[in-house]
Image (cartoon, rainbow, N blue to C red; front, top):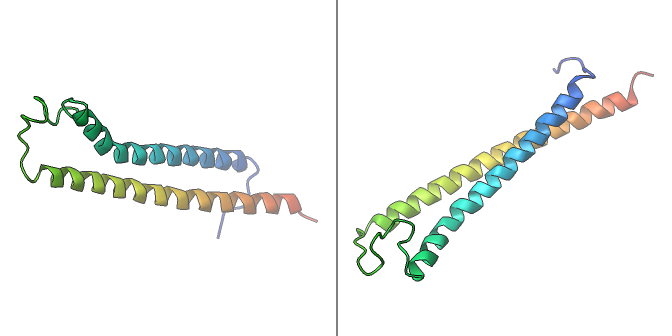
Amino acid sequence: MYKEWNQEAVPSRSMSVIWLRIIVGVLLIAVVAVSVVPLLVLLDLARGGDGYGMCPSGLQACDIPYTAWLELATGLVLVIFGLIALLRLTMRVVRREERRLQEKQQIGASGPV
């Protein structure tokens, strides 16, 4: 089912697991960043700011349609779900690669008798 075990392939496989772990970390940071955006906008508006461009002339003069919050919420939810789906997929690939690496190391450790 698998190709014959190659001694030189093990370091590259462990390196691929490291890169996959880095991708997982970046995805986690992205999920947190997207989740924090609405809070930052609200905090800026509460302090009298423009909500990072949502209300350029302040909250009192803000002319936002009734559906703007729904568009923003839908976009944020879709982005978060997409990032979480990518995160789950990446974690599955990481687990599969770690299992293959462990199997290869166990086969190499037992070696031919």
